Image (cartoon, rainbow, N blue to C red; front, side):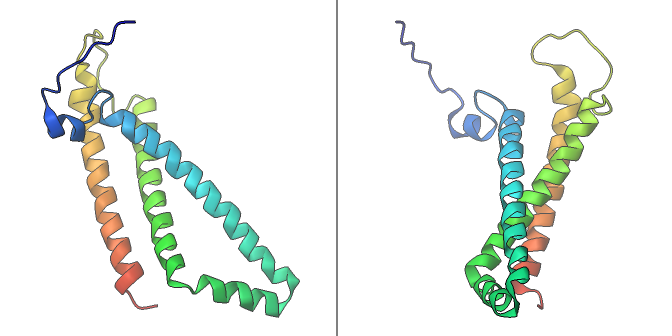
Length: 145
């Protein structure tokens, strides 16, 4: 078996820039993970809400557990996952519908439609996601409740 070693000419910048797979592949993986996380939250939410049918005491006990500060952090992570998943999903829909791809061209690597149209859209969406996360974090931890 041939064990080739490849030099890392880009260093940490290459890793931050997407490395071997590209930023879009990592966003794809993160989109899947956040989707599963939102599904898990949804199932836990249904379970916690179902405690109401067991009477006021059980409901009060369940709500007392949810007052724990660790759940506030969990609530923030759910918000982060939702903000990313929703806006990245809109970006993916625009790409799939061909609205963010640009004119058809010969597929020669590096793909110009990806670099010229999809990458700027990705950056814009991720900046909006970051702004939402900062605003949501401020509201979660410092807002009036």
